[in-house]
Image (cartoon, rainbow, N blue to C red; front, side, top):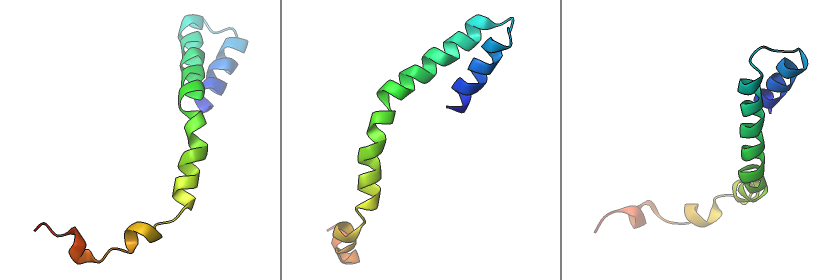
Length: 64
C-alpha cells in the first residue's frame, strides 16, 4: 500500500519516470488481488490458537 501510495504521488507530481511508477501500481494491484484475500483466513488461523498442537506431549515428536 505504501508503494502504491508513493507511486501515485510521484505520478501526480509529474515524474519523468512514469512507466516505472505505473509498473509499481500494477504490481500493487496484483498483490491486492492475489494475496490480500488470504488475510482473513490467515487471521482466523492465528486467532484459533495452538491448543490442538500444544496438547501433544514432547515425547510424541521424537523419532522412533
